[in-house]
Image 1 (tube, rainbow, N blue to C red):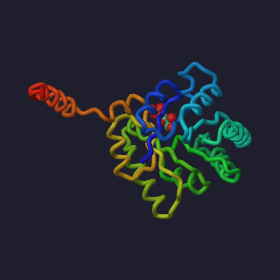
Image 2: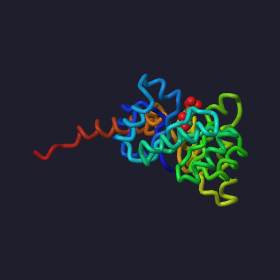
Image 3: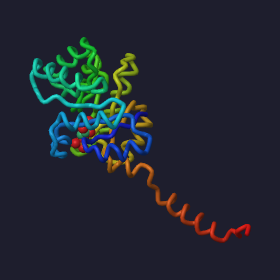
Image 4: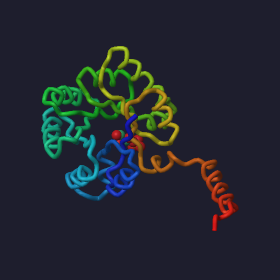
Length: 216
Ligand code: E4P
């Protein structure tokens, strides 16, 4: 399973990249706004740090506007994946991008039918938002399981990108379900290795090591 980081903060991206497990980046307008920097500058900075798929989202809501932005974003760098919301106009824009050879990440997916439509339009990634479904007492990971099954049933090669990840168990479940990618906030990436028994065990090993007689 690939690990993307879900942030527009370049310091967080550098830190995660230093672990050697980072495959790509996803951003959205809210994450870009948090940086306080212009959109294009943020994307160019990220491209310089990570050599992998980097999702940058369109903000137009009409077909022509989305296609224009998609073209502009993809022209920044070949690694840019254009993020498009799953609306009627968005679906048409995904289909257009597919024809132009522009990879897309279809975002704001909350239902398996949206994922099926995105795959039929040729999306590179589908982003089910699991945390936001959990927030409204729905089962976000069940949506991932349904999309996985539908894509496998018909051999769609659209990758299932688990988004709106809120905790390490979302990552475990994503891996067990065979999701292709999880996009994970920095805070959760930092939690992935943590286990109290590892800390206690290491402390004990180091303590006991002091009792081992030195050769000289
Ligand atoms: C996906 O690509 C989105 O950027 C993101 O995962 C949304 O997460 P949130 O629900 O925590 O805002």
